Amino acid sequence: MELKLVALENPKGYNVILGQAHFIKTVEDLHEALATSSPHLKFGIAFCESSGPCLVRYSGNDEELVELAKKNALLLSAGHVFVIFLKEGYPINVLNAVKMVPEVCRIFCASANPIQVILVETEQGRGVLGVVDGLKTKGVETEGDIAARKVLLRKFGYKL
Image 1 (cartoon, helix red, strand yellow):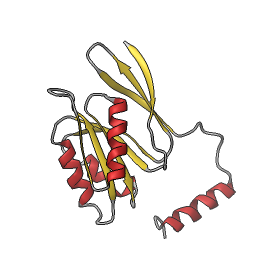
Image 2: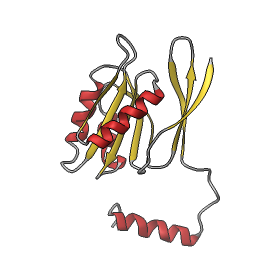
Image 3: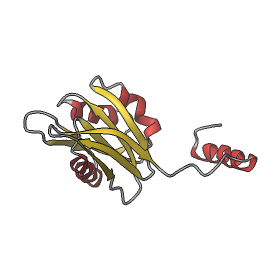
């Protein structure tokens, strides 16, 4: 077996959800979950099929995001992994809907940070061991950092 480190390509810093599911209808079900979550949400989905023709299956409502999802799914080429790129919405707005799709097994991360995916490759195929989401922690927040965090959450509208 061989370990590989693959950095997701996300040149504009879009939000990404990386997960694993188990069935060919995943793409259509994820599309429905995202499309019904917000009329303004733009997204692209790609799913690595793991049997039969082993294709990258895809869908979405924004061509740029669909292309990014397809490109990254092919880079990963890992069993039943899906990649969702979002704009005009955040993972916090759709994560529960994604998790409720019956064939979704797990979410590896949901982030706009740089993401590195740790893969294992065997003679059979590839699997995700884990992810590196963002940068190394630099310290513990101060009282000033706490105040800034609270202001930012209220600016985004997540707290009153």
